[in-house]
Length: 427
Image 1 (cartoon, rainbow, N blue to C red):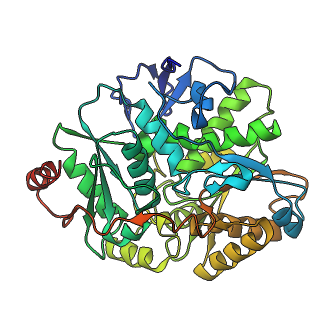
Image 2 (cartoon, rainbow, N blue to C red; image 1 turned 135 degrees about the horizontal axis):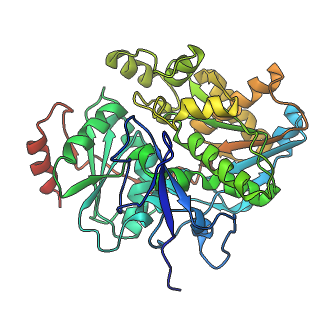
């Protein structure tokens, strides 16, 4: 089946200016302040397309030029075990991972696949530059597998301490190269390496939260929920490092409200972090649009101490227009934190009540929900969406093989030209 590219324009969230996408536009060149841009789709009604495979059933609200092989959509189901334990009448779990018994078949066990399949599908088939993806772990695994399956050249920039997350069910093609910063460095250092590599025109950045394709891919979680329940949720829970998934959920809730068939958008967005890495939580509790002070070395130490490593981001899209601060304000949301012990408890509880395993970040969201219920923030009859962003069976998360070592390990202080020469030599 021949796919027709989705028709859309971009809008500057700060001032409402609508303009054309030039192919890989990440920000408004005329903006007077830092701001996300948002996709404005020609099709304003939410209409899943059963003729398209996997995640592309939501293609009308995805800024893409093509479809790719082997994608899967998030799965939403009504909870029985956890719901009964918490006394909630309308708790729905949206799961992005691998559990064929409920129809979830994301082989990398992470909702980062939703980003990878959308971002890569935004690329033209004629693109001759090499994509750069910066990651703390799960995003690296998802993009590496999707790019390998679809023969898309990519450089994955990660902290070497996250190498254990690079496990796969199939061997990767040579189009995927992994560049790491040494032990003791963190995600922010991996971002630095990617930015230096992008100084050469042969490479280009995926763009993170600024990429509308990444956000609208992640936003398919709430589309799955509404397709199942017929309503925008009253309450939304997710663990966050950058907060991009929560921003994406809010953006799609706004689109759904404009559709008019799924209720008004009164969704409260609750985000969860893992102590002691609580930059977003600390900033929000200070009632500040600006991020709380966090020295690099302290950030690295905090990142080393948390179980949910993917939740450690020293540069989240919090302050800019349309970012997480604005999402929390507009949704009357809040933040929660959980210790490693609380995350472990939630993992075991979820396995016992729902029958499968979660990755630590998703368990942080479960922990946050438990606390909110105890505090009375969530009423028993409210429609609740728990976004479980990764997991599966323990067997599924240990199957296959792991990359023995990165293709290249470089110090984040490396000269840009030297880095480009070294990476060129990998291809």
